[in-house]
Structure formats: C-alpha cells, structure tokens
Image (cartoon, rainbow, N blue to C red):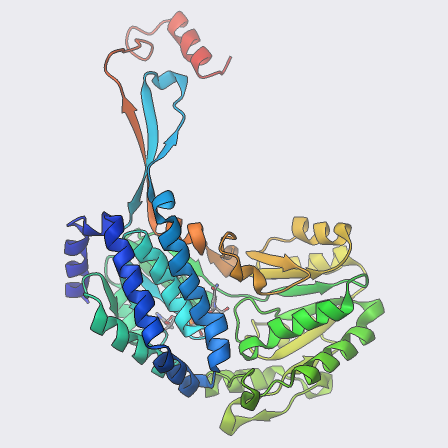
Length: 454
Ligand code: NAD
C-alpha cells in the first residue's frame, strides 16, 4: 500500500494531473471502459444481489455517465482561477483563488449502489486533478472484482487503482497518509475513518446514513404521494441511504394512507422475477431486518425467505418511536408508519433522533412545508417526492451531524476534491505606511476608515 501511495504521490508531483486535457483523457477512458463492458457490469451485480439491468442502468451507471459528462463540460469553469475583489487595505493588488487538486485520494465505497457510490466520487476526484485509490465494498464481491479487473487493466496504477478487500485491507489503507479521504458507509465506520484521518489531519468527506423521515399531511395529494413514496422506499429493496426510513402520517388520514400504500405496492408487483426488486445483500442483513418486523404490527407483507434472502415489501402500522424498527436505520423493505396529530410535536420528536441524511414532506400546505424545512436539520431532501433530489447535480449531496460531513455531485463534487488556494498578489509601485512604525492615532483612524469600521 505504501509503495502504491508513494508512486501516486510521485506522479501527482509531476503536475501532469493539473493539465485539463489529461483529466479529460482519464474521464473518457473511464466512460468508454464502462460503456464497452456494460454487460459484464450487469452480470456481476445480478450475481451479487439480483439487481436488474434496468435498475443498474438507471440508479447506478446513468449517474456515473452523467457525472463524467457534467465534469467534462464544466471542468474548465470549475477549475479556473476565480478572481475576487480586493479590499481597500491591500490596495494596490489583485486577489484570486487557485483551484488546487488535493493529491492522492482514497475513496471507500459502500455496497448498496456499488458502482455509483465507488465511481461517482472517483470521477469527481479525477476531474479535479487528483490520483485515486478506490476501495469498493467487499460485500458485493462480483462487482468489486469486475471494477478491479476493468480499472486495473486499463489505468496506470499511479493515476487510478482499485484495491479490493474488507476490514483488514481498509484498516491498512487508513494507516497511510492520504491527501483526502472520501468515505461512504455507516456512521459507525465513518467514526473509525474520521479517527484514522485525524492522525494525519487528512481532510475527509463522510457520506453516512441515518433514519430519514417522511411527513405526510392530510392535505397532501395522496395518490401521487403514495406512488412516489412506494417507489422510493422499495427501490433496491429499501437498501438506499436516502430511502424514506419511516412515515409520520397525520392521524386523520392514516387508514386511507395505509390502504393506498397497500394498493400501490400490489400494483407495482415488486419481485425479483419482475426485475424491479433485489435480494437483501447478505444473511447478516437479512437476519437483522427480520428482527425489525414485529408480527403484531404487520399491516402488509411480512413474508421472508432466508434461502433467497428475500423480504417482501412490508408495512408496519401503529409504529412508535420505542419499536425495534425505530432504534436503527432500517436499510431494507420495511416501512413503519407512525401517526401524529400536531406537526410541531412530530417534528420535535424527530429532532430528538440524530440528524438524518434526508427528510421528505408530502403536503400541499406551504405552512407545513416551511415548518419542517425550518425546524428540522437534515442533509437534504424533497417536497412531494423522495430520493429524486439525488438526481439533480446542482444540489450538493451530503449529510449533517451523524449523517455525514461535506457533500458532492456536480460542482460540489469537484470542490470537495479541490483546495481553494487564496492568493493576494500585490503591486510594488505603492506602499501605504499605515501598518508600520511609528504608530499614531491618525494612522489608526485611517486603518479604521479603510476597513469601514468607522
Ligand atoms: P459500512 O460502513 O459497513 O461499510 C462501508 C465501507 O467501509 C466498506 O468499503 C467496508 O469495507 C468498510 N469497512 C467496514 N467496516 C470497517 C472497519 N471496521 N474499518 C474500516 N473499514 C471498514 O457500510 P455499508 O454496510 O457498506 O453501507 C451501509 C451504510 O452506508 C448505511 O448506513 C447507509 O445509509 C450508508 N450509505 C450512505 C450513503 C450516502 O451517500 N450518504 C450511500 C450509501 C450508503
């Protein structure tokens, strides 16, 4: 690992990556590598957890392709020196910000969208002129293998290298000195990464998880709200970091809402055979999820099959904040439905939990919408929709508090792998004497005046 990092650092120090043409070449190489090998990528992920070609394209590859195109289109604009005004005190001078790549970056991926979560940060890092070591999650073993095979046989390891492995390999990587660490995964491991990074004062971006609430008020458009909620929750069998984790519905429409949920799930016919559903990633997660389904609270679903790692879309009714399903991020196809009569009280209860990665409000009322937006702190979210905010690259994507540090996608991704180096460039034809000895009252007055403090 040390040798690999050393070789990347030596290459970075040649300044080659600072050249925009070079960066575009790397992005093109990655683009065609993925395009030309799509079938391999589809086959690998199907082996891992039976994710269909449609879902893999829409929720993984399309986002990576889009990120590559977006970065290529905007790289010059994002990366050029940014002129800023100079304050009077520094006259005569000009001021600007140099967008400096950070250097050797470590990207650690999560398993639930194994291509997107590994490759999108790598694209941002390469676009910003860095070298990258990518450690995909080991849980989807086939996707990890195919990414390693493709990337390691096409890229110079001093620019972009995949290192496969689990806890041991990641721990060893984290002992090394990187210029930036970008981690996607659980809050628990995020803390391990943060601690390891602190040793070298390495800057981090942590994309973590949490329990993302969905508020449903009685004045919402029920039909559309339920349709969008059901899609967002059961996409990838609920194994989505920004899936609505639980619903808080206004008591008055509880029964109507539950019935509409049931009808929509039945209409969608979620099944692996229909290519719109996936397996639970492994037995540990399957068993963990089974324990969250309290039989007495099942309103819909509840069927499981251990041999297939299958859990039916499941709705829990009369859920409370004390239930097992409300003690941890669900990260599976189980949706607890809680009720409220007073929105302020409901928000106050959510505020007692760690800050979530996302929050959603289904409502026609501006007052209700603003209540949630202004009172609750969360990474990002949507009004009258769920999950889809991730598809707009103009919206920085990331958490707050326990759900993460920093953000990416689009320009935010470029920025998160870039150091803004601020420069004051002074002219030499004039030197104002104000700051020099001897100090006097009148000089102090002038300083105050030029700093507009008077
Ligand atoms: P995880 O934290 O178990 O694993 C993430 C990565 O960390 C993997 O590459 C794994 O190999 C590595 N890792 C695991 N244990 C480690 C240890 N002890 N020391 C060092 N490295 C270790 O997370 P996961 O199960 O892959 O993903 C699920 C979590 O990720 C959920 O909480 C989900 O919400 C979150 N997530 C967040 C985002 C986001 O964009 N914010 C996206 C997807 C998933």
